[in-house]
Length: 146
Image 1 (cartoon, rainbow, N blue to C red):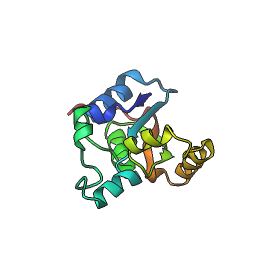
Image 2 (image 1 turned 90 degrees about the vertical axis):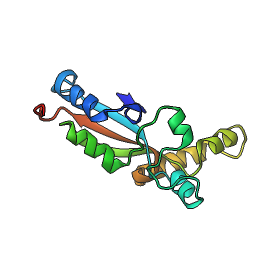
Image 3 (image 1 turned 180 degrees about the horizontal axis):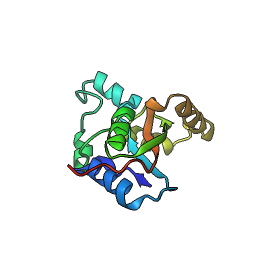
């Protein structure tokens, strides 16, 4: 399981290729989870002029070592480029607010457990609008070294 790791790497495809070719068993599964460039909170930030485009690296993300901001399509592209077989793709938690806004709201009684569950359920219907995106992968063809 790689949770919020790939976006920090200089060569994410290289790591995924090594996982596919050397570490993943024939019956194993790899779970990849990354922040989502298409989360509504990012799209709103673009409309507000805070970032130039959905996949832009924010100053805060750069401080945390982010090198890329994935979409479902680009995450799947990198997994397939490494030879992995993608068996499932989805998202986790519909997110319209920035992290700092969530941090403030969660300290109040404004956000109920029912609201959080509603965001989770809505994310199941609209994975491309979730805070995080994920793939489930199986071992694929071993690719030749170039």
